[in-house]
Length: 324
Image (tube, rainbow, N blue to C red; front, side, top):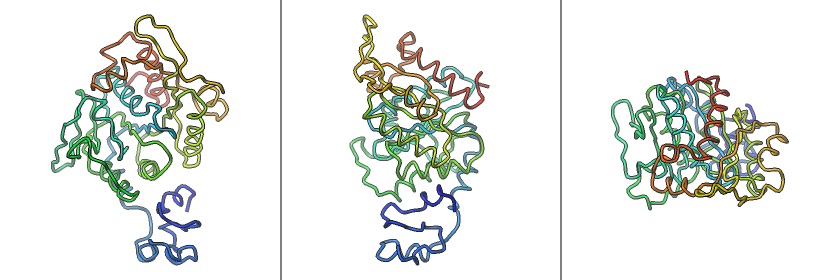
């Protein structure tokens, strides 16, 4: 069993030295004594998760899968996901794009993309995602809640089951890109998504989002190590909120000083691509709160211009420079 498989098959509440649920020693090893999962592991089926083959079949028409990650919360990962998806959909209107919000406990994409309060419909082919534009759709657990104020209080296995359900029961149709907005960290949701996406056809990779200060870079370094250990291709790192840009005079002010060289220096040290930087623009925050499209509202803003360069690099990674 590979290191990736071993890590992915260890229950979240397992003791140290757990052999993994798919091991022949599962539930029988000395480390299993006293574990609440002992009986389940000893009697449960062994071998690969059958959902992996089902995900592969369901995502057969999705060419490229893009995980948006960050080890640190509050760096604007969901905002970057929304910006990337809108920018790519605008620049290549002949292509189809989807966003899957797997931040189970904090689903913000319905609000950011302006479809809060919408509902998903189920048919014989599965759940139909909510359409933002003719070529951009979204699926989120936020659509399944009775109220935006409802809290999701789930342990790891139930979160993993929800992600499995999203990947096997949503009818995306033919997509050129599927962007997955993930929660902060390197835990259950990330392991589940990685396990399922590895078994699919087509290309996949991860974009990491950070802010310039060291407290954020420390956690993003861990996320890069996570990607390397699990053999997740790193598309690159985006430095968000690099500087505050005044909407009136366009003067830049460094709110989060990069005392150690920022994301660009970190990328050099850790040998991963640097995609670019996005400024902190209060108009963008307002658009996210109101669910408006920042790209069409402020097409000449520095953030949109920086975004175009980032999108070009992402397309280049997937061999899709001209959006074909």
